[in-house]
Image (tube, rainbow, N blue to C red; front, side):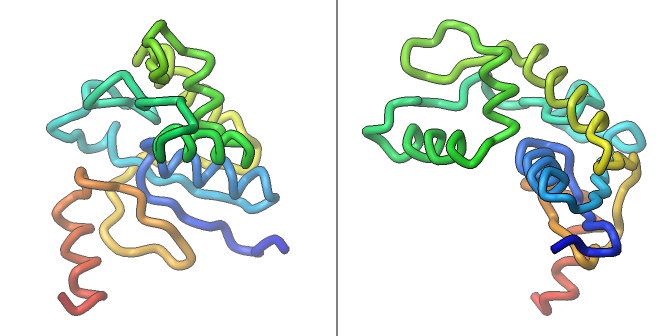
Length: 153
């Protein structure tokens, strides 16, 4: 089933980019909203989608632990982010370690190139419907307040 109106995703990090890709692959039109390029964050250095800001590792690939098992399950489901990570992989024992620049560039190149994904550079100030908020700890104050107000907290 394809929705007539596009699905909106706020946040072009790992979760937002993966969600946009998976929905687009399933014939949904997606608008991915990313504020970097209009408004920066304290952690990011670039405007690229999928920029890693804390570490260059996705941790263990061993299926004997929860993190490795999650990655194995994501691979079975066709994870776009893990495909990008594999293309940027660097030695790291059993960890999935990546070259951060190459990884981010892979995400940044592929997401906007998908024919069903439109990337819009703007600070979203209200919750989209239908949509996904994938901004994590770097949510803008304005959007965070909108979410709090809608949830009554």
